[in-house]
Image (cartoon, rainbow, N blue to C red; front, side, top):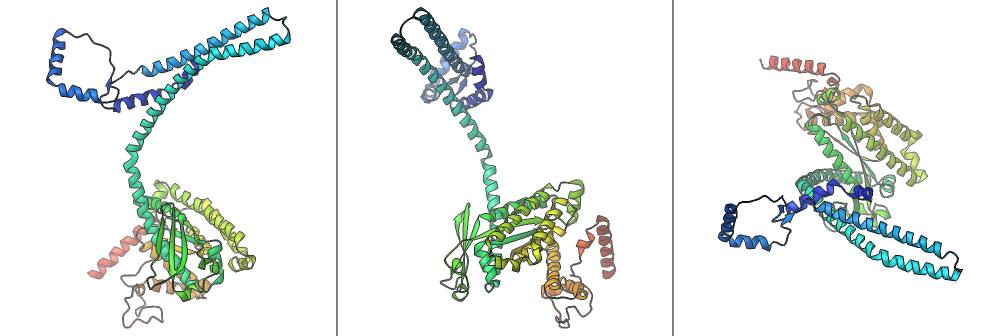
Length: 485
């Protein structure tokens, strides 16, 4: 009995009970009585006579006015005593039955059956009141424990409620930004692929792959940005699209649903809507498969790799390579066999996925090969790509222009001798609409064939070593001083 009671008796419940009674109005912890002289008693009597209304308010509170810390021990003592009574009664009845069996062992079988029935009724009559008492004692224990533990849990939730609300607000803000980009990307991809029957079939059969290329470092404030970005992109899995025919000239998307499930209705003109497959016309919901791959490439990432932690980036890449594999598996299972050769010529998609997985597992510093492989796989699967960094300026522009030139070289037969020239032109002020009258856009360069002051230098090459970056900064400062002197 002592072991049973000790196993269920917990100090946590005792502390919770104390917290519950302490929080009640008019609670007074019971303390040992202290002898008081007659003068103190007369003073207390005079005080009560001066404040009768206060006494009335205190007495009117329907809560316990004092709490005895040993009350929980007494409750458990009642359980132990009740259990002891049950055990003692069972032992007494067993002893009584054994004595009866010895005295009446020679009786016939019919008399034995009657004796067994009589003994069973006697056991019930003797044990039933004791079991009811034990049940009542345990019920009181359970009730007190439930009330106290529920109170403690509510206290903890109340303390963390403001933080939960702030996190929810932060998540909603991040999700709104991610959703805006996703809607724009989906609409552009849908408009450009209206005449591609393979893409349209893939869209309603499998879904749309959306790949985000992140260039954020895992150091300082950019680590927090990367955390927000990972959660926001993951929340896009709850978004589904529906294409409808526009009834007016207002083609703005319509958003319906709640946090758990959003449906974005994209409106198309009647002529464009007729080009869609019948499944999409009938309102079939189109799934999204967002994935994020991040590789920090700036000088802050160098600090993170040498003195900080890159676990966040590694975990993000490992989780999303699994999501990409799931999409590829779903794609090969649901797409018709006649469409597969169009997407995976010479079985290169599977090899690219394996290569990407190996590069992620290698944990190499500033492994930009991850970005190239992920981008190639996304394009081969008719996906939508997004590139971003902290401010979408330097790192993003370097990555986007390099990818544009690579597409020109690989898919539009740009000669390798003009690759650097085209890259410099894309990174010059031509892309910002600041052409002079003497600039010839057909030649792809400026008249003086020199980079201007607003030229985006390929600083990514200098980020291989922090020493080269320092040298580059010193030389740039010297050139600026010489120019203005």
